[in-house]
Length: 387
Image (tube, rainbow, N blue to C red; front, top):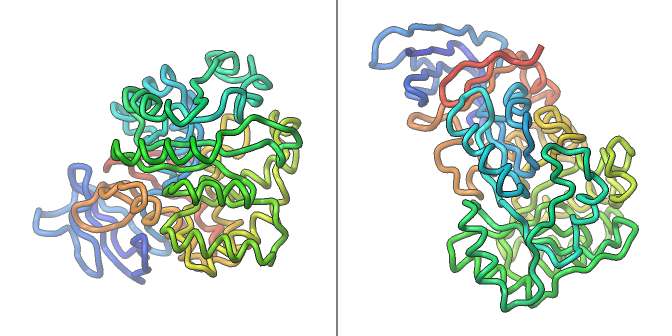
């Protein structure tokens, strides 16, 4: 089946083309650009009128936590790939099969089991959530790491789970209003070195400037959050952002997460009280000014932020923090694809996967238009958008 999306405004993941034709066949984009028509393969079986609409690459959420139902919900709202940052082995295997065998759910990459100190974050959340998440995962004891010598074995265990990258937790509990055990800088560095030796990128959970500095010293590739303990404009934020840029580290934004938990809209709010969302936005502005790659992510869970709609809110918050609309859309498409090695998606170009989002209006000027979904394609299969 050949599909032609005709006369559509196209944001290709990096720039906007005012009027284009895009052709899909066998799960791939076969032509994209001004006046391309159906291409050399003959007439289209299905023609979609793009007048007054914008075609985008499917959105990529660079920080989620996947449970049953998450991937289907994400896809309904135009998120075609989720980058999961902690999923226990039994649940992960089920979600991987679901994503591999079905096109009515978002695709999935995952860190599998994260690395944390015994009793460290997020064990306090799992205890608090016992009985409220699928499969009783709140009662599960997760693997942990005590000292640097355990790092190679820990990484081998993650590879056996099928992890696509490693997530490490550097969090002493200060921002959560408590005190938690946290891994030492030496252990963080040993885990990072072992992961790199195994060909895995490393993403660090760190939500204070001090923790982020420890992660940078360890040699991580990315930070899973902006830091939230420094007020906007603080000189230390600027210095830390410049360090991140010098080390070629990307940062996942998660402003929607900080907004949600500080508003008290989640069952985890009593045990997770991050710093001010305004502080997070201030850190984001310092990172942007320093030229650090910013990847849009939500920290979506079964509670809040929600899968799919959380990304719409994240994009809105990014523009409120100072990003242009095209810049925010890049943070949710081509940038996460580039930094997580997803070379087959994140842009609209011939030969790439037909993971696409069609919306009414122009989100390159008004970011809220990203919520006005007309159609979603995952691997070339046309889906029904949200009601």
